[in-house]
Image 1 (cartoon, rainbow, N blue to C red):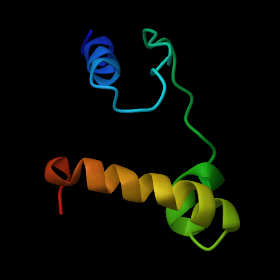
Image 2: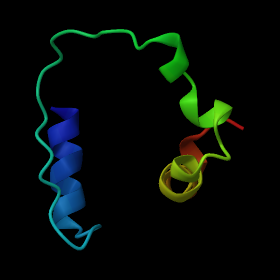
Image 3: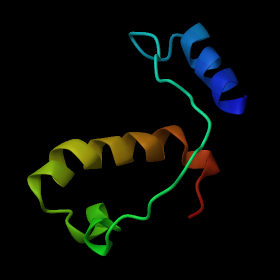
Image 4: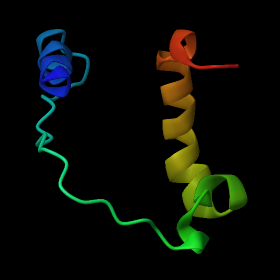
Length: 71
């Protein structure tokens, strides 16, 4: 319910150029990733995928949610 409410708020406030269309579904099952997938970004920051895809998203997240993050 909270996720749907937030999705509606994002769309109502036109936070993004296009509507958020992500399906929000109930949790069913969780599979733990293999160890080499765990903490991938922190262990591979110099890889091109991390620098050009993940890093900008992490920086945007940190900027948007600065007041909610622990320092």
